[in-house]
Amino acid sequence: MSLSNCSSITGKGDLTIVSDLPLQGANRIQTTQMVEAMKYVLKQANYKAGKYSVQYQSCDDATAQAGKWDSATCSANARAYAQAKDIIGVIGTFNSGCAEIEIPVLNKVSVGMVSPANTYVGLTHGGPGTSPNEPDKYYPTGKRNYMRIVAADDFQGAADAVLAQQLGIKSVYVLNDKEAYGLGVATNFKNAATKLGIKIVGFTAWDPKASNYQSLMQQIGQKKPDAIFLGGLICENGGQLIKDKVSVLGPNTGKVKLIGPDGFTLTATITGPGSAGPKNAEGMYMSVAGAPPEKLKGAGASFINGFKKARSVDSVEPYTAYAAQAAQVMLDAISRSDGTRAGVMAELFKTNVTNGILGTFTINENGDTNSNPVTVDIAKDGKLTTFKVITPPPSLVAAA
Image (cartoon, rainbow, N blue to C red; front, top):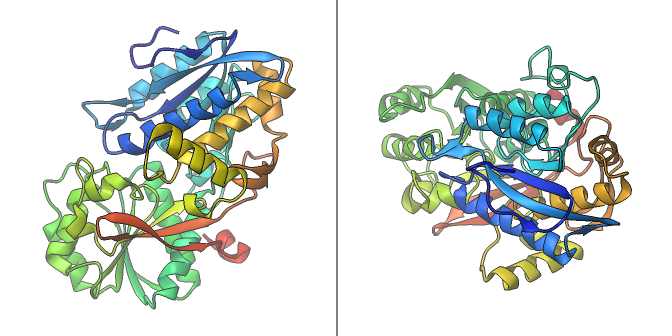
């Protein structure tokens, strides 16, 4: 496939797997490691999926100008994948907004997608914070072609609410970046927190193009919240938002706590481009849908240790193991299939993993996993450190 934003092909086969991730901007540290994880799994499998030989190509859905995923690029990528007959499956996307664009295009040509990172609820099922026509509008053929191996935001929002309760927080001001993911997870958190008796003293959006948020933080301060929840992405000027929160309302270890979902849970929040900086991020709680790398056992622990050694890295980003598992799920589906797009798509929905990189899990008819832990990290001494793992109760998830 000849796309300027795709890498050279690795492996050699008649069937091509592509990944679609934002490889520029604040997410770059995380997503480039995810690409390396996929290559690691494919190389371990000798680029074989049963009787089939496969090859792999990494594609970028971000632009340098945007510094994040770009809707026009996501659309162009999806059309290119649909037209390239050798492409048998897509691993991605990373951002839910990009998934909203790509899923319907690939649905029409029966190309299966496995996301290691999308968490917006409406991609797979309805509920609070979703639109009335979701998820059906993403599947024009009436058949599902998309699945994810990570917990959706109804779980993450509920877990963050449980965290707030456990921290003794009585009132929260909720912000969002107006994107599908950000508004969605903010709504999920608000609903779950309300269910737990936590008072929501404000719910509004921040303007990602604003030069600063000092006046916003002053307005929030007048409501005297115990915490602020940031529903959104670090690349939506999140670093400035955190800086101004600390400047106006004090450190995150003080009276006003700061909680963010997985759009903030990456090294770049602390040290990357557009980051808040170690001093400003210190004490911020950040959740990520999934288990922490150091808690993985069996095949997961083996992957982490082998990957670190092979790639000479000291730390593994939150979604690296999920990218590796997504690659394995895609290989397994191809190996069980008849080698056609529709065949692979059908097999993806029969995924039943036992003792895999992420442990044991299945995928339901909606494309959701039944394994839904949520990790809460805390920014400490310039690094992300695991604080605790929360699996929220089903009744709270339903309320979210």
